Image (tube, rainbow, N blue to C red):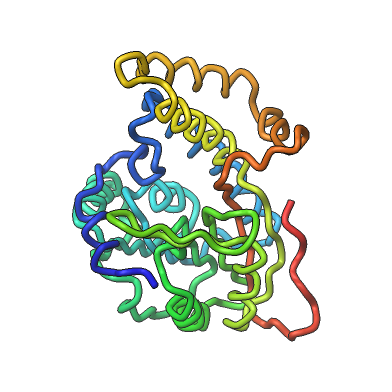
Length: 279
């Protein structure tokens, strides 16, 4: 079970940058690495929204908004955005980022205590469910998805593992779940999983993060040269691109340990039609 007090303490001290919430600090990557990943994810998200036929004149509910990059992105497309973030430093960064958008409402609040109002054409969760216990995942999704308008979707982006679950304790507490477990949880919420897609931008950067972790674990600290190794690793990732993400599986290696998936959901699961397979 996750200790929510520990989760809150961690995020109350989080660095308000695109690298911090992406868990990409400390690997020697240039700050542009966070921007690269976000821009690549935007293309996926925009395509998934377009394919789902979501009307851009509607309202977006952004839960666990972090420093506000997604809130800003949605504000440029949708009629209204309601963004909720509990971490004070991340919320202040989001407020500064979104100050010029009159169609954005920002709430510094716990999503578990949030009570939606009105209807939403898109409910977005950009990496928040992994910080919730299963019972709260189900309770939150059941509560907020009642406010989806007809034709609206839920779009989740969650860090995952290949099989089962992986829980981490200590100062940074999180539960990584497989796509199959998330699909099962969503079914318990009365949601149909329309589409599951690998987040190739995350996977590419995660290859680099886990490589640097192994480098730190095997090379003496005085020889690690993390700023240099990190920049060279990032350059190699950008040069190789998405094709690099297929190399470990082709060689029979389960690497990296963590993956990430997008889930497109809608209400009205009838218990018979199952979700699509992860790609």
